[in-house]
Image (tube, rainbow, N blue to C red; front, side):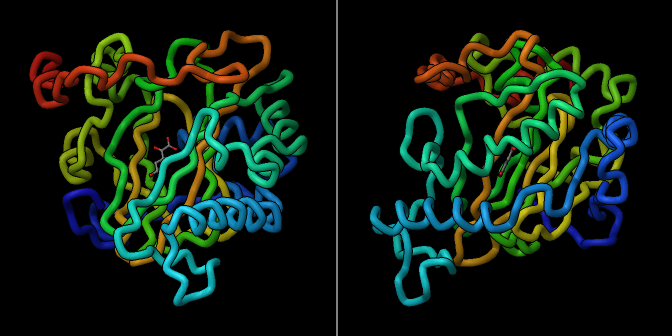
Length: 294
Ligand SMILES: O=C(O)CCC(=O)C(=O)O
């Protein structure tokens, strides 16, 4: 994970728990969210919709020469020189009917409406990832990327296909959503806006440093098609590394109450996205952390 090797079941890496036993009881799901800072639901989505969205993305990647055709396309074998991709905004991959049918499904919006106790919307901008060998996401809060509207905003991470430990799924730092516990981090890094401040968004690539500093273990699991996990803006998360020669495919999409303000960078027909971040060299996170004392 990141720059370290961790043992599953050891001091630093444990398992996410699923909340399938709570399905249908939204008070209990809200309670679980406050307790854990995340909610994992197996088969939250219809697996057939996940497979259709995966296939639509793979076909586009195949047309772009990213897939090695010595295996069936669904194996998502990385072509020589395959760079992987990130799609969002107005890009075709993030607007295929199959993909939108998954992440904007009426039953999914109804799930969030029940969770949030009011009609729900999703950002028009989507984050769609095909991660190559060695790729991973370092530890961060999502609020630094999308904190201009309500903080009552949820990221839903959906693997597009099976994601084994080796492919590198999402991991959550246990207990990191508790404000009293990480007050200083929230008051410094947690107040960043990457477009306003032009600071690197990833807090650390070292999961051991994070666990030692903030407590808790990293929690992860293997994901099957249909499984999804959601978490809040102040839950520290990252991913395991892709240790295979297949793409790790996933998307992350955002949901909030319709009557609360939405971050203007991510909504509308052609969302503007990050308009200033990285346009000039950003302040390094090491420098920023020195200033913050975290
Ligand atoms: O898929 C990943 O590697 C990272 C996802 C993530 O950071 C997110 O969903 O906010």
